Image (cartoon, rainbow, N blue to C red; front, side, top):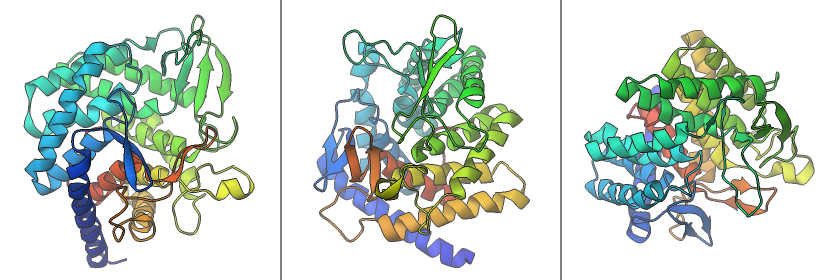
Length: 378
């Protein structure tokens, strides 16, 4: 593909995403969408883990367009999250997803001191979830009375550690980075299989740090290969390498990337689980594709050109297919940007629908192709 042809579809894709998001913002405003049902995004409470993706997408589009209306909504979303940050009890490991894409984004783009302080508060709460014995960041709090999640860590947190790396960079205090590296070392040891596939959930004994079990989580089975988990891993490990220069993180990111790329179907958009059997294995997850595409583009920038083209071209194939085959540009009745996302198949939740994090990473991947940062994980 020539650079000129690529530039044409990328510019078209960016313009259509910007246009549709502007239209969506008139209804959604400073709310927190998650999954689209019947063409409209269902709005969640500010404490829901996806709360950062809508304002994060607004910040990304604002950075590339200068549209002040998008900036204003993103700022209001950030302010609304104060009730969650100050309320404390609903905070979990997703502090990174929520405050990297709101307060860190605002601080990077505007220098707002209040945003810097918010993000540092969030980083302190995230650091406090670290279990010294197991060297992991605890994922969840109890969801119901009597439940014990104190030993649970999940692959998604590979992305959240960027909040800790950022906190060390802006404060000069290495403690945040030490915790982030310890968690990512645990990811290398216990989450990444030799073939590059990834466990979603590892349960540790919180008193001793020993591994108790490895669970399927949102994948088909404990030994299957949930595609969004692979995307979290390859992107999160690439980010960890960006922040530390630690070769083992880069090597593992490449390992997962090769697993991911070699198992894509003909249209380059992944199935929700690479090892799910039969008809259910044919269900796509466009959000895994868009997340992986953005991570692959970062990875491509970290290696020699003799390798970089593998990751860059893979990301371009995924992103172009999302644009041409999964986009909703001709459907004004659908708010989501990308069709065919799968949130949680085992629990039968939000299957074959647009997902806000799929939309966010799609826009971020386009921005990476256009070299139109900044990118808030970095």
